[in-house]
Length: 223
Length: 292
Image 1: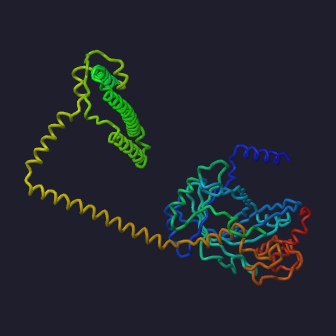
Image 2: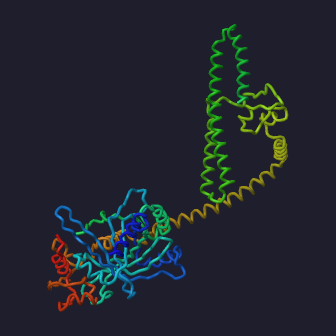
Image 3: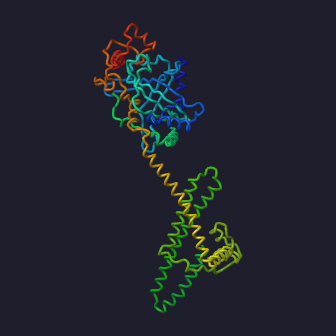
């Protein structure tokens, strides 16, 4: 118990000191398949990991939600599990993503609270036993770039065709474009980074229009 | 401002003289006009002085920046300063050319008293640049013509221009025009190319599609188009097509992640075929003791 106590203590201490990166600054956009090479080329020039080339990834993301059916206030807690399909022994990643805040026009990026942690493959069982339900899942394949604290991912999103026996089989791209995301995770209150992101996004125009995208405007709300 | 003071004293003396005339000659109207002119002079001098001070301040700050912040000073900042200065110059010249501003050229600055002694007030008004209002300094400071050297040069140039043959002058003008038009040609050509490039780029800007962006973001963020089971209202999701499989009791583990050993163990002897999520979700929710 004492170790647990100290762990919680150090966690609260860390929260108080505001060193936990629990805010994600995000810009999103897309690029058509035929221009993705141009974008990758440009990103290779702009970003830090020039020598090693872009890092590829092939991830399976499962989006769960935990619903507390209290009478008047239906609460939905979204949780996402991500696992690498191309690296066998990589840990699973559990991620909570909160409501996004668009802010006013002066704020260059979307801000949302977000907590990441590494976990083992048993997380899926754990979530299921906890009563989480799987809302949807997809596969994201693509490239990751770094520029300082900024992370750029260029990924193709695939729908899982349920009957597949192996993940990676029977998948189907959902659009003719790559999803492009520019994000930074930082402790709260570091709004200056958003300005850097705006400048960086500016450099990718007109190839990609990285913007604040309002989920609410996209129509469908989570069922 | 001693100069202005002196101007005033002189004018006041003038005025007094005139006043006596006026009183005697009943030229009261003229006096009024004079008074008005003086008022105008005063106000316009005030505004000129104010603008000159503004200009001086911004020049000083520009010089300060060039001298002290040359490491962090960038070109846009420098241009900003420059624009400020030129704007102030324009507003100064506007004041000077305003119709209500009396023609300063018609006024004389007359030094009434020169002295070789230190004048504290003068030092203060000139910010320490001039300490005495003496004989060797006054001609320089109160001169309204160019400096002797510059004047000489101007005269020389004017002479040269007058002595120039008409043909020669024409030739030089033609050569000069040729050079200028050549340069302007180059510039306009470059500009044309640039504009064509910019417009063509705007034309083929279809590197990305807004619809696709929204589709992808909605899919990743909210699972739009990715949900496999029926929606919560019980109707099959349009995108999930014919994947509906009849429920087969409780199934552990997430669908679509079939071959995961731990899940298989949990399921025990149950059917291993990954099936509709519906059953899975339902069972999970129903089994969950804290569900409601």
